[in-house]
Picture (cartoon, helix red, strand yellow):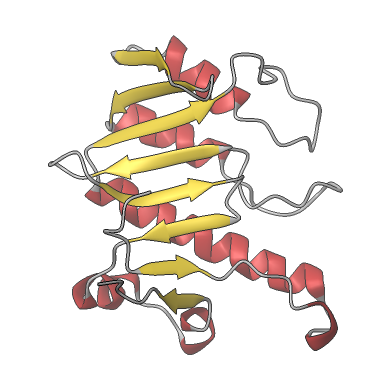
Length: 173
């Protein structure tokens, strides 16, 4: 894990403290989507991690990296595909408008199933020009880490309610 990250998205389920859990999840999805769009504009490359047997033709409402992976592989863009030590396939691709549009079309707009995942992607990283991950979304969005500057926070135009979903990660020295 990259210790370059300084914020994480609070995706916790507050259960008893909140009456409408679906409403909280909808807000998390909205913020996750906003962050992903923002970092896709800042990044230069994308790495997606998936299992070779991920569902390519998912059932409605079932979380699957398959849609995005299939369309990225079928795109005109050059992909680098390797298998890592965890038997995960790592697909690396330069970010261009076509790839960004595939990601945008894959984003979850609302919860319409029992799975309640933030994103259909199991794991992906957005990399900067130096190859460092500036945004990572793991476990279907449940573990989302990022590097934000004060300038980024201003550009994101977060309202006070949205800011509550960001947890500063303390530096370990």
